[in-house]
Image (tube, rainbow, N blue to C red):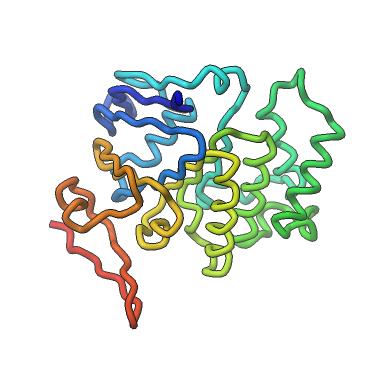
Length: 248
């Protein structure tokens, strides 16, 4: 089976200064890839390259033919902190704007409205449809932008640290929903919380200057050390605890 996205020898960065070097990765249908790594290691840079927001300095990103035929085959949930809360737009308008990801020649206005209404109800935010985006809590905002990302029926859903600035209840609901969505689409999830995502993801990529791929959801401290990936591992026992390794 061909990969939805194939990344070959990719180097990418800003102002001619590479952040990532020689990255190789394949994303297949129904993959659930967890992307981990330290701040500044290149996780968001990788996402921007996949989304076409950054041009490769070296190497290439190849989309499968059916992916290339769609205007925007990727749904994207950005970090809440990067959203302009002062922009004058309502919840309904934010979700409706996801239709811009479709080919305009194939947009059925009635179907789009029905899909918006269904998503708002499904995500439990129909009662705030007329609220301004700046009035929402972190969890509400994540629900709204997830609706927007799903409106275009993407083949891949990318989430950049969706568990930031949300409460524990919504975090649990989000991961369970992603687990169900993974039956219909591939998911790429960036997170610092290895312990939580390891219960849901199928594979893991550690990103820190380069990318190291793990074909399962188990990763040890020794592996993180060998890949120079200084992040936290959460373990479970009679008393839940977190062990943070000191950065040298």
